[in-house]
Image (cartoon, rainbow, N blue to C red; front, side, top):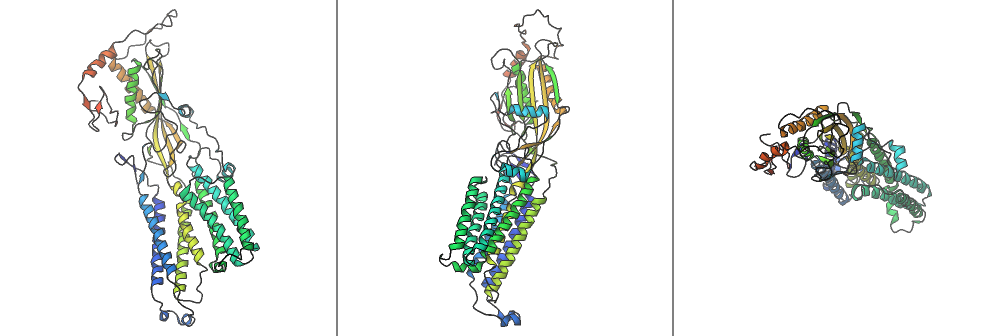
Length: 566
């Protein structure tokens, strides 16, 4: 599949994270279409007693059943199969908008100075190689710890998914208990069928809510109140529901058995979904920070130095996408304040698909897909068999298997789609850059600035189908990249030497201790003299996007393309 930055932007090739899910959807759609054609054939063709075996022919009784319910069911199968095919076709390509995946922490806008609220956290991670985290709190926290295990380093999009699974497990177990209490207390089979229909309706409503209405789990209070109220109403119906009009007709539909099947399928599917999510909860990131640092003494004006640093950071733009900026604090002198040349820059390049993602276990996800196909196959066979019995007026014909067949067909689709978020897990690589500019040590010549750079290669993971917000992408691995850090400081140092008219002067002798602390460094006209010819140069335009370029720019500030002559 392809990942598009925008409808007209550059395209990246993403790993086909939905490839296996699309295969399950296609196979299920094929099953449904074949079953629908078979039902159409049986329902719309004339009965042929001569083609039935002699023993069966003698037992033919009654009139031929109506074809309308079977035609409607075949149309429903075609609709479900078409939805599966359309879903698989749409998942061949994933469209993410600018800003996705989410940043590791909060950002500051470009062309503005400042430090984001999360920059300190990211600096600590880059300095120590450890990600401070805590167990999730809030609704279902105890159930999550008991069923899902430690979740300190799980992606943020995985937590709502787990809460929904836990809520559905609690609801399924509660409804199963309610059915077990109602079954022996029912006054007659018809009232039991009506109470069972109520329990099945609540289970279906919970599943529909998580699928189409809200992605978060219902609150424990709301879930408990719904279960308690449903139990009281269901027991009341089972005991005193004889007066409901036409309630006797429900006896032939096997609704208690179908409701039991609904709840068992729900518990089985949600349990497998919980196991699949446990396999993706993650662990503390692996860190190897050896050789991540580089430093150099630079003889340049602080403002010009920061301008060069910003141009060098363009080298890390991925496909023209600007880096995510978390801190940009220029020297105080560049901001018009006192001469205190101390600056901080913290950026992350646009995350790109990892070339060699770590293998991930999909055992539970594969089991979910196979379970969905099995449910679909059994449900289709049951309905084709039911249609054949009804249309040929066989003595065994009844609607007893209609409700279980419908339950299995719907449960099959739910089993295939419940792991959609987990299939969308994608690993990406990015570069973390942390630069500081400060006055060189006292032993060096006065006026020199020291540039320090720490560069880390970061691997992170997120879910394409989840909410893209802070915390939805978490770190998996950090590795120092000393070669890139040294090249970065060498490029900036080389600019300072060229701007100064030659190599940087040798460090001066130590200053006398009696020198006044308020004395300032002598003026250095060389950078200004070197900048004058550049300002007078003819206007240039980027050959890639046509944007007017600043004097001496080596990279386009809009698209990041290298400029001719640099």
